[in-house]
Image 1 (cartoon, rainbow, N blue to C red):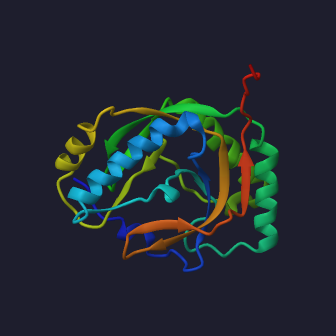
Image 2 (cartoon, rainbow, N blue to C red):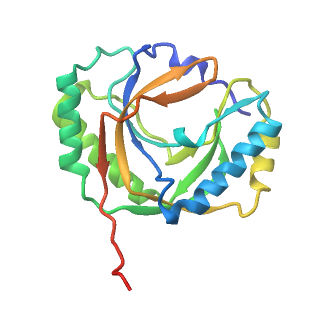
Length: 217
């Protein structure tokens, strides 16, 4: 069963909520197979399941690392957001980029690409929490990330998830690697009519991870 997310965003402010996202780079050659997989899933959802879910366009694909503050909390000032960005750079920038395997999974609220193994992503989550604790203390969001994933569609109508899951699993190849080379501090807006999540560009801050480069031939 998949169910609508509407009840989870009742207190989402119109100006957006600050989040830390892992953003897969579409220009990275190593990510081509991942974006091909995501595009195939988007076509399946668009052609067969828009009566249940809103497919996510490529530019909004992301893995949530951490909410910065909880919905309903006082808005952070520009100075506080600058401090959060500086702390993220201090704790996270230069850490090694990492590669995860992406495979289809239909959760409670949406179809996703599940990411594994857990450990590399969880390390980034822990470092991000340290950065937020440094700046915000107990004002930091109490959000606990679920298993790492990239959502490919948001449910707007409750229904049996079986047909969606079967259709996505049948798309071959069903798995692909994705290399995470950057995090971003972004202000995320929610459109309940979509439903969709988007963010203001450019990000408030981009935190680059270290990539090993092969020597030129």
